[in-house]
Length: 344
Image 1 (tube, one colour):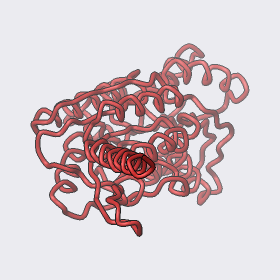
Image 2 (tube, rainbow, N blue to C red):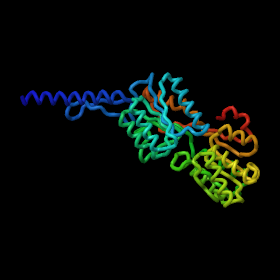
Image 3 (tube, rainbow, N blue to C red):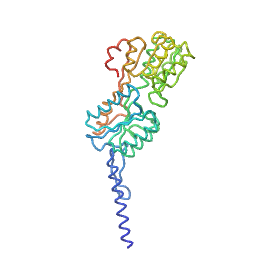
Image 4 (cartoon, one colour):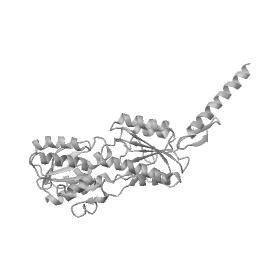
């Protein structure tokens, strides 16, 4: 009797191990090894491998779809899936870290083969990125990166696909320095607190400005990459700093809000106050053409082709760099009209 019970328990244990292995193998990718007990143990790679190279089910976690930039990015991701012959599932977190974590967990439960994630902040989605790794699903970050002390590219996720945010801001600063002969009082409208582009664009701009003693940042506030937030913040800041002659906005949406606030205050954008920003939106290009904005450095949202090429390369066993860089351009009055077709 005892012998029969032992056989039954041993059979149950082995069946549990087998079922666990099958469930894990159904995710993005896994490797099988033999542990010290001789049992088959399923482990994920660092980062997990893709189990197949064609007909993938791709999950895309968007942090928010509230601007022309985000809508252009969404379309590029959907178009990329279509061109690759992959199925596509998208979620939208509405600008909330907790919602995006929940969204990613939902995509994991849908057994996607790979995840493309546009994180809201550098730390907010790390737990979900690590959960995807544990489920053997490779993650590709786009447009915003994760904190490398918490999640490492090439280990916890495959790569970051996006622009050089520090360089973008340096280019804007250089245009402003040149246009003002190195003498300016600047209001700085920052991006969403904790987001990679907000952190690095501030770093790039501030460091470049510090190298010119005549350039002074008189106020700096978070405008959340949002047009109306920037308008409200700019209205308040103008009351405290009526003699400002430059606005640096972290994106074109904030620049548009600043332009509206300047007009409401009786100032002439582009004449009384010079404006520099980042993104290359159609609205920004039109403001440059109209003489209301000095410069806009592109931050191309059409990241789909680069992201899907990275997925294809990874699936075929090629080495994918930790950072796939999107090349950007500088738009001024000299080339804005010719590049209007590239706006969004």
